[in-house]
Image (cartoon, rainbow, N blue to C red; front, side, top):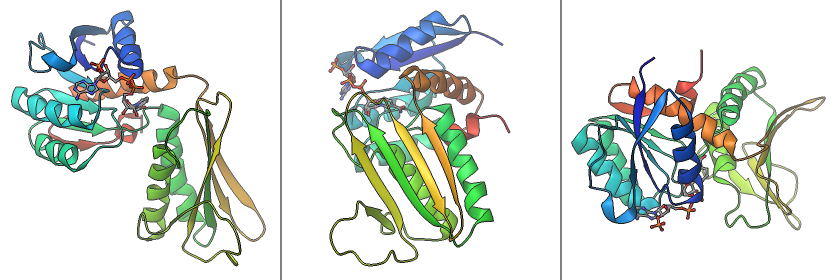
Length: 243
Ligand SMILES: NC(=O)c1ccc[n+]([C@@H]2O[C@H](COP(=O)([O-])OP(=O)(O)OC[C@H]3O[C@@H](n4cnc5c(N)ncnc54)[C@H](OP(=O)(O)O)[C@@H]3O)[C@@H](O)[C@H]2O)c1
């Protein structure tokens, strides 16, 4: 395996900093460039893949640059807006692009398992429960929404319309075709997601716990290696898992 040169944008931030340090620490990778906000268009020093952990505005700018320079792109940034999405669509016709709002390999594997479970249990109800630390600003989590989208696709339901975030008051019996989303907040949980697939006599529960943020770093390295060998197009972290 050849040493893979990687550029990281957002390396002064929490997640980009972790990924940059992991790249530096791994002999299979080389940190070719660390791109600060005012030098996105500077020398990427031979990088073959760019890891982006910035903001939607940063992603839009980086997608255009990556396409122009024919550098594959891993987007870890979340909350992407229309501009960023359009820039990524354009870039994907030129280079490999992976948008991964949750880089944990375990969550990617859970998504794969969920498709198998839902195909086998067509009439069962789907509820998603997530727990995060008390400082998390958004709810439900992006990962819960991504799991909901997988469930909706498997059930042939419209998404996000089929999602039901929380229940309160006289909501009546649970209708068919609803995917429940429930956000628990408190303490220091890094991130937990449970998908409950509930039938009349039994429940299957797929449960993932991130013990620390290096779960995301491990997935980032996996994704970077995968993207270096991929042609133009869109990919997900699931593509980078083994068969
Ligand atoms: N995919 C995953 O698994 C995963 C995991 C954790 C976090 N994230 C996402 O990663 C992103 C960053 O999170 P974080 O916690 O690391 O945030 P953070 O600590 O605030 O760091 C953000 C970094 O992005 C840079 N930045 C912001 N806007 C920029 C722009 N327009 N152009 C260039 N650089 C820009 C910042 O540079 P300055 O220092 O100049 O401000 C900083 O280096 C968020 O979207 C977060 O949700 C994803």
